[in-house]
Image (cartoon, rainbow, N blue to C red):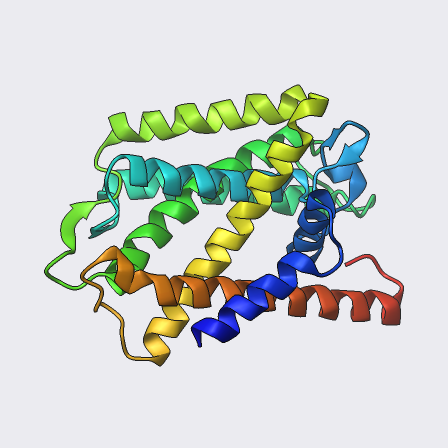
Length: 255
Protein backbone atom coordinates (compact mmCIF):
# COMPACT_ATOMS: atom_id res chain seq x y z
CA UNK A 1 0.00 0.00 0.00
CA UNK A 2 2.93 2.33 0.63
CA UNK A 3 4.10 1.81 -2.96
CA UNK A 4 0.65 2.54 -4.38
CA UNK A 5 0.32 5.66 -2.22
CA UNK A 6 3.76 6.88 -3.27
CA UNK A 7 2.78 6.32 -6.91
CA UNK A 8 -0.39 8.40 -6.48
CA UNK A 9 1.63 11.23 -4.93
CA UNK A 10 4.29 11.02 -7.67
CA UNK A 11 1.70 11.12 -10.45
CA UNK A 12 0.12 14.21 -8.88
CA UNK A 13 3.49 15.97 -8.56
CA UNK A 14 4.83 15.17 -12.02
CA UNK A 15 1.73 15.23 -14.21
CA UNK A 16 0.15 18.40 -15.68
CA UNK A 17 -0.29 21.06 -14.57
CA UNK A 18 3.44 21.22 -13.93
CA UNK A 19 4.01 24.67 -12.43
CA UNK A 20 3.61 25.26 -8.70
CA UNK A 21 1.05 28.00 -9.17
CA UNK A 22 -1.02 25.88 -11.53
CA UNK A 23 -0.90 23.01 -9.03
CA UNK A 24 -2.30 25.29 -6.33
CA UNK A 25 -5.01 26.49 -8.70
CA UNK A 26 -5.97 22.87 -9.40
CA UNK A 27 -6.28 22.16 -5.68
CA UNK A 28 -8.32 25.31 -5.21
CA UNK A 29 -10.57 24.38 -8.12
CA UNK A 30 -11.58 21.19 -6.31
CA UNK A 31 -12.68 22.81 -3.05
CA UNK A 32 -13.50 26.46 -3.81
CA UNK A 33 -15.72 28.41 -6.21
CA UNK A 34 -12.76 30.71 -7.07
CA UNK A 35 -15.05 33.63 -7.99
CA UNK A 36 -12.60 36.40 -9.03
CA UNK A 37 -14.57 39.20 -7.33
CA UNK A 38 -14.47 37.27 -4.06
CA UNK A 39 -10.76 36.49 -4.23
CA UNK A 40 -7.63 38.46 -3.47
CA UNK A 41 -5.31 39.22 -6.39
CA UNK A 42 -1.53 39.46 -6.16
CA UNK A 43 0.77 40.25 -9.07
CA UNK A 44 -2.30 40.37 -11.29
CA UNK A 45 -3.33 36.81 -10.44
CA UNK A 46 -6.04 35.54 -8.08
CA UNK A 47 -5.07 33.37 -5.14
CA UNK A 48 -6.11 29.73 -5.65
CA UNK A 49 -8.77 30.02 -2.95
CA UNK A 50 -11.42 32.70 -2.47
CA UNK A 51 -11.08 35.16 0.41
CA UNK A 52 -13.09 33.00 2.83
CA UNK A 53 -11.38 29.72 1.92
CA UNK A 54 -7.97 31.40 2.04
CA UNK A 55 -8.77 32.42 5.60
CA UNK A 56 -10.15 29.00 6.56
CA UNK A 57 -7.16 26.98 5.44
CA UNK A 58 -4.49 29.46 6.53
CA UNK A 59 -6.23 29.66 9.91
CA UNK A 60 -6.41 25.88 10.19
CA UNK A 61 -2.74 25.55 9.22
CA UNK A 62 -1.71 28.19 11.76
CA UNK A 63 -3.76 26.46 14.46
CA UNK A 64 -2.18 23.06 13.89
CA UNK A 65 1.35 24.45 13.63
CA UNK A 66 0.75 26.51 16.77
CA UNK A 67 -0.46 23.51 18.76
CA UNK A 68 2.58 21.53 17.60
CA UNK A 69 4.86 24.36 18.75
CA UNK A 70 3.08 24.27 22.11
CA UNK A 71 3.93 20.55 22.19
CA UNK A 72 0.29 19.46 22.21
CA UNK A 73 0.85 16.74 19.62
CA UNK A 74 -0.20 14.09 22.17
CA UNK A 75 -3.08 16.07 23.69
CA UNK A 76 -6.49 14.49 23.23
CA UNK A 77 -8.84 16.93 25.00
CA UNK A 78 -10.82 19.79 23.51
CA UNK A 79 -10.33 23.32 24.87
CA UNK A 80 -12.15 24.08 28.18
CA UNK A 81 -15.89 24.92 27.87
CA UNK A 82 -15.51 28.72 27.91
CA UNK A 83 -12.82 28.56 25.23
CA UNK A 84 -14.84 26.11 23.20
CA UNK A 85 -17.87 28.40 23.25
CA UNK A 86 -15.67 31.28 22.10
CA UNK A 87 -14.25 29.21 19.25
CA UNK A 88 -17.69 28.03 18.18
CA UNK A 89 -18.82 31.66 18.20
CA UNK A 90 -16.13 32.33 15.59
CA UNK A 91 -17.72 29.64 13.41
CA UNK A 92 -21.13 31.21 14.00
CA UNK A 93 -19.82 34.57 12.83
CA UNK A 94 -18.53 33.00 9.64
CA UNK A 95 -21.91 31.38 9.13
CA UNK A 96 -23.69 34.72 9.48
CA UNK A 97 -21.28 36.41 7.09
CA UNK A 98 -21.62 33.52 4.65
CA UNK A 99 -25.42 33.67 4.62
CA UNK A 100 -25.32 37.45 4.23
CA UNK A 101 -22.83 37.11 1.38
CA UNK A 102 -25.00 34.49 -0.34
CA UNK A 103 -28.13 36.65 -0.06
CA UNK A 104 -26.29 39.47 -1.80
CA UNK A 105 -26.32 37.33 -4.97
CA UNK A 106 -30.02 38.08 -5.21
CA UNK A 107 -30.71 41.83 -5.50
CA UNK A 108 -34.33 41.53 -4.38
CA UNK A 109 -33.47 39.72 -1.15
CA UNK A 110 -32.52 41.77 1.94
CA UNK A 111 -29.10 41.38 3.54
CA UNK A 112 -27.61 42.91 6.67
CA UNK A 113 -24.59 44.66 5.12
CA UNK A 114 -22.54 44.86 1.97
CA UNK A 115 -20.22 41.83 1.81
CA UNK A 116 -16.49 42.57 1.86
CA UNK A 117 -13.52 40.34 1.13
CA UNK A 118 -11.75 41.44 4.31
CA UNK A 119 -14.77 40.19 6.30
CA UNK A 120 -14.75 36.89 4.43
CA UNK A 121 -11.04 36.54 5.16
CA UNK A 122 -11.42 37.46 8.83
CA UNK A 123 -14.36 35.20 9.63
CA UNK A 124 -12.83 32.40 7.57
CA UNK A 125 -9.52 32.66 9.46
CA UNK A 126 -11.29 32.51 12.82
CA UNK A 127 -13.30 29.49 11.72
CA UNK A 128 -10.12 27.81 10.49
CA UNK A 129 -8.64 28.20 13.99
CA UNK A 130 -11.79 26.65 15.48
CA UNK A 131 -11.61 23.79 12.99
CA UNK A 132 -8.01 23.02 13.95
CA UNK A 133 -8.84 23.08 17.68
CA UNK A 134 -11.57 20.49 17.09
CA UNK A 135 -9.70 18.28 14.63
CA UNK A 136 -6.33 18.18 16.41
CA UNK A 137 -7.42 16.36 19.60
CA UNK A 138 -9.56 13.93 17.56
CA UNK A 139 -6.55 13.25 15.36
CA UNK A 140 -4.28 12.69 18.36
CA UNK A 141 -6.79 10.35 19.96
CA UNK A 142 -7.00 8.36 16.73
CA UNK A 143 -3.25 8.22 16.28
CA UNK A 144 -1.67 7.59 19.66
CA UNK A 145 -1.72 4.61 22.00
CA UNK A 146 -3.18 5.32 25.43
CA UNK A 147 0.32 5.20 26.91
CA UNK A 148 1.35 8.18 24.74
CA UNK A 149 -1.85 10.21 24.83
CA UNK A 150 -2.01 13.16 27.22
CA UNK A 151 -5.24 14.15 28.94
CA UNK A 152 -4.76 17.87 28.43
CA UNK A 153 -6.54 20.45 26.24
CA UNK A 154 -4.93 21.42 22.94
CA UNK A 155 -5.54 25.07 23.94
CA UNK A 156 -5.53 25.46 27.71
CA UNK A 157 -6.63 29.02 28.44
CA UNK A 158 -7.50 32.42 27.03
CA UNK A 159 -3.88 33.55 27.22
CA UNK A 160 -2.94 30.83 24.76
CA UNK A 161 -5.96 31.68 22.64
CA UNK A 162 -4.72 35.28 22.43
CA UNK A 163 -1.44 33.97 20.98
CA UNK A 164 -3.37 32.21 18.24
CA UNK A 165 -5.52 35.28 17.63
CA UNK A 166 -2.34 37.31 17.23
CA UNK A 167 -1.28 34.87 14.53
CA UNK A 168 -4.69 35.16 12.87
CA UNK A 169 -4.35 38.95 12.87
CA UNK A 170 -0.95 38.56 11.22
CA UNK A 171 -2.47 36.35 8.51
CA UNK A 172 -5.21 38.89 7.84
CA UNK A 173 -2.80 41.81 7.58
CA UNK A 174 -0.39 39.90 5.33
CA UNK A 175 -3.15 38.86 2.90
CA UNK A 176 -4.69 42.35 2.88
CA UNK A 177 -1.24 43.79 2.10
CA UNK A 178 -1.55 42.12 -1.33
CA UNK A 179 2.11 42.45 -2.20
CA UNK A 180 3.16 40.65 -5.42
CA UNK A 181 6.03 38.76 -3.75
CA UNK A 182 3.50 37.07 -1.45
CA UNK A 183 1.70 35.32 -4.33
CA UNK A 184 3.62 32.06 -4.14
CA UNK A 185 3.91 31.84 -0.32
CA UNK A 186 0.19 32.49 0.20
CA UNK A 187 -0.85 30.21 -2.65
CA UNK A 188 1.34 27.38 -1.37
CA UNK A 189 0.46 27.77 2.31
CA UNK A 190 -3.29 28.04 1.76
CA UNK A 191 -3.41 24.95 -0.45
CA UNK A 192 -1.06 23.17 1.97
CA UNK A 193 -3.81 23.77 4.51
CA UNK A 194 -6.26 22.01 2.19
CA UNK A 195 -3.93 19.04 1.74
CA UNK A 196 -3.23 18.86 5.48
CA UNK A 197 -6.88 18.78 6.54
CA UNK A 198 -7.83 16.24 3.88
CA UNK A 199 -4.76 14.14 4.73
CA UNK A 200 -5.81 14.02 8.37
CA UNK A 201 -9.22 12.74 7.31
CA UNK A 202 -7.59 10.22 4.98
CA UNK A 203 -5.17 9.01 7.65
CA UNK A 204 -7.99 8.53 10.16
CA UNK A 205 -9.93 6.55 7.55
CA UNK A 206 -6.90 4.30 6.99
CA UNK A 207 -6.47 3.68 10.72
CA UNK A 208 -10.16 2.84 11.17
CA UNK A 209 -10.20 0.59 8.10
CA UNK A 210 -7.11 -1.31 9.28
CA UNK A 211 -8.26 -1.28 12.92
CA UNK A 212 -5.06 0.48 13.96
CA UNK A 213 -6.63 3.52 15.61
CA UNK A 214 -4.97 4.42 18.89
CA UNK A 215 -2.06 2.06 18.20
CA UNK A 216 0.91 4.32 17.43
CA UNK A 217 3.68 4.35 20.02
CA UNK A 218 6.37 6.11 17.96
CA UNK A 219 6.41 8.69 15.17
CA UNK A 220 7.56 6.02 12.72
CA UNK A 221 4.26 4.20 13.30
CA UNK A 222 2.53 7.16 11.64
CA UNK A 223 4.54 7.12 8.40
CA UNK A 224 2.36 4.60 6.55
CA UNK A 225 -1.04 6.09 7.53
CA UNK A 226 0.37 9.56 6.87
CA UNK A 227 1.53 8.73 3.34
CA UNK A 228 -1.67 6.86 2.61
CA UNK A 229 -3.69 9.76 4.01
CA UNK A 230 -1.92 12.18 1.67
CA UNK A 231 -2.62 9.87 -1.28
CA UNK A 232 -6.30 9.73 -0.31
CA UNK A 233 -6.36 13.54 -0.07
CA UNK A 234 -4.95 13.80 -3.59
CA UNK A 235 -7.51 11.32 -4.92
CA UNK A 236 -10.30 13.30 -3.25
CA UNK A 237 -9.03 16.52 -4.84
CA UNK A 238 -8.77 14.91 -8.27
CA UNK A 239 -12.27 13.42 -7.95
CA UNK A 240 -13.85 16.65 -6.75
CA UNK A 241 -12.13 18.65 -9.48
CA UNK A 242 -13.31 16.17 -12.13
CA UNK A 243 -16.90 16.18 -10.85
CA UNK A 244 -16.95 19.97 -10.79
CA UNK A 245 -15.63 20.18 -14.35
CA UNK A 246 -18.32 17.74 -15.53
CA UNK A 247 -21.09 19.69 -13.77
CA UNK A 248 -19.88 23.01 -15.16
CA UNK A 249 -19.69 21.54 -18.64
CA UNK A 250 -23.19 20.07 -18.34
CA UNK A 251 -24.93 23.08 -16.79
CA UNK A 252 -22.85 26.05 -17.90
CA UNK A 253 -23.00 27.34 -14.32
CA UNK A 254 -20.01 28.37 -12.26
CA UNK A 255 -19.95 25.98 -9.31
